[in-house]
Each structure stands twice: as C-alpha cells, then as structure tokens.
Amino acid sequence: MSEVTLNDENFNAEVLSSKTPVLVDFWASWCGPCKMQEPILEEVAALYQGKNIKIGRLNVDEAPRSANRFLVMSIPTLMIFKDGRPVEQMIGVQDKNTLINKIDKLV
Amino acid sequence: MARQKNEVIIIGGGIAAHTAALYAARAELKPIVLQAASPDQLSLTTVVENFPGFPEGILGTQLVENAKKQAQKFGAQYVLAQADSFDIKKDYFEIVAGKEVYQALTVIIATGAAARRLDVPGEDKYFGRGVSTCATCDAAFYRDREAVVVGGGDSAMEETLALYKFAKKVTIIHRKNEFKASKIMQERVFSLKDKIEIIWGTEITEVLGDGQFVTGLKLKNIKTDEMSEIKTNGLFLAIGHIPNTKIFINKIQLDELGYIVTDKKSHINVNGVFAAGDCQDHIFRQAITSAGSGCQAAMEAERYIEKLKADGKV
Image (cartoon, rainbow over all chains, first blue to last red; front, side, top):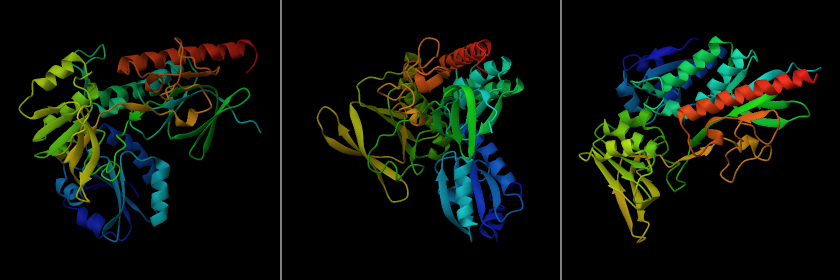
C-alpha cells in the first residue's frame, strides 16, 4: 500500500473511519527534519505494502484543521490511529526500526 | 566465511558526512554512508548567509540536500540507519546498524551534535507540546501566541527571528548579561523591539503546563535568586549542543565534553578512523568548517587505504 495524501476533507474517511490502523505523518515543506522523515516513511510503506496498515502524509499548511484537532504543535509528528483514535504519538524524526516496532505492536 | 569489507564507511548525515562521501566517492572508495534519523544542524536552520559561493544565501536544507545529491552522483551509497555500535577489530572496524553488520577498513565519523536540553521538570512532559528545539519547524504554530527562546548564541538569535514572523511576542531568556551571538545577528534582534523582549541574568527552573500544553515557565534571577513566573505558549531551546558520540565512549578518545579528539589532519587516536564536523568541533561549528573537515577526513582515509594496499595488507 502506498502512502495516502491526507487533507481536512478526507481525514474522516481515510483515517478515523479506516478499518485498518493508519500511520499519519504531519509535515510541512518548510520543515527540514520533515524532509528527512519522508524517505524513511517511503521505505516503511514499501515494507508494509499490502499489509494491514495504511500510511498517510498530512501537510499541516494545507490541512490546518486536522493538525489543530490533534494538537500538533511540533513537526514532524507521527501518530498511529486505530479505531478512530490516536493510540501512538511520536515527535521528531523517527527511524525505520522505531516505526516498524510501533506498527508491529498494533497490527 | 569472510564478509566483504567496505573501504570506507561514513557515519552521519550532515554537511561533513556528505562532503566526506563526495571526496571518497570521487576517489573511487565506494563509500557507504549510514545516515541516522536525527536531523543535522543545517536541516534545522533557515537561510545560510555565510557559506561562500551563495551571495544571496541558500536554505540550510537545500545546501545539505545538494551536497548529498552531489555525493550520490559520484556513487556514494546511502543507507537510512542508525549506527548502534562501533567496534575496533584486529584489522578492520565493525558497525552494527539495525539488523545489519558493516565492516570497513576505514571509518569516518561525522555524527554531529544534538540540541542540549535544560534538564528541568516539565521539559520532557511538554516536549512537542510547546517545548521545541526547532523554531524553523514549529514557529508557524505560534501565530498569535507567545514564545520564549532560551540561549544567547547565533542559534538563539535565529530561533527568535524565525518566531518573530509569527508570534505575538518573543522573549529571550539568557543566563548572562550579554549575548555571544555574532554582531550582525544580535543587531537584527535588537532592531525588532516591537515584539521582542530580553530577560538577562535569568535561568529557567521549571516548565509549567496545563497537562496538554506549555502555559508558562518558572524563572530564577541568577544574581538575587529571586523567583518569578512568566506566561508563554512555547519554549525554544538554543542552549548549545551535545556531540552524538555515545557509541564511541571507551572505544576512541573523547574530550571532557564528549567531543572526539582530532588532530590537524582529522585523525583520531585510532589508526584508520577519522572524524569530521560537529562531533569533533565545539569551537567553530560552521557549515564551511564542517564541510572542510569532511574533505580532510576523506582525503586522509584515501591515503590510509593506499598505504594498506602498498603494504600488501589488503
């Protein structure tokens, strides 16, 4: 499963109503560390292709309501949503192994 | 079964590592770069105005990205992995990163430095909830809010200027009664009196919050010990750095602050290992000096490998 582009319009459908857990990367174009997160997330997405997890990216400039709603004050922030609720929150760039461990615990 | 050894492994992901990778790749040493997830200093900054060759300045993120691309163009291979351990073997070095084991004839350490924490109550609890080490990342969340920057160097000035664009008010809190930042950066901050306040001779003793976000700070006047409180939505840390050298403790020589001890040629106390960038420099810490030391380390690594080959050791 490749990464899903999230915004304020599709957040409910893609994340909160999702049947599978969703890993969401809150990012912005002006954030250097967010750029470091991107290729790591791509590797993780490739690893979980076809597996029971959705991976999405949310640009906080383009989707400020969703970022506000989940109290994002620092980016990159990564959250895992399960059954419509955030169950895991990570602040700052996360390495591949950390993400794999968090996902495997939940899926 | 003998594992094929790499000629050069570079640990790091900043301008020092990329420059070392560029030179090593051009010397056909086929460098492998182990790049961890911790952001390098240039990725946390805005416009770099003092890197020669860019009269209009260049974004820090752009500069490191360009350097990485340039190294990749000449064949440097990047692996996104954190080096978890480093060991000195009889005639090679071994690095474990995640589930992979890497062996190399030479290692260039360019692991950089990370922002120093205050180490006061509330700081960890509210990290990412108002406490931040990256104003360029998080300043935009402070539109119509107030923020505090702690520190007195160039990075404190830069964090202040990044926040100034968004915040209602920025307060700088500094332990001393003068800044050590460069003159030009200080003057920029001093010229923006409308929204910037400076509290001198004061330290932060606690980060206060409402359970969700930062709401204020407890302060102590260093001279009088007088305690006070300030209301704020955010605290940006710019109180210096600590070198990322944990995996090298007891393996190579570090100074009392944890920086790798190098000589003029970027050699360390172990033959075949070289160090570059902020992990070995707490004096200059500039993009250009980091790049320079990365270049030196790679050229010395090349010389070392040539000698091994000439001596018939590889």
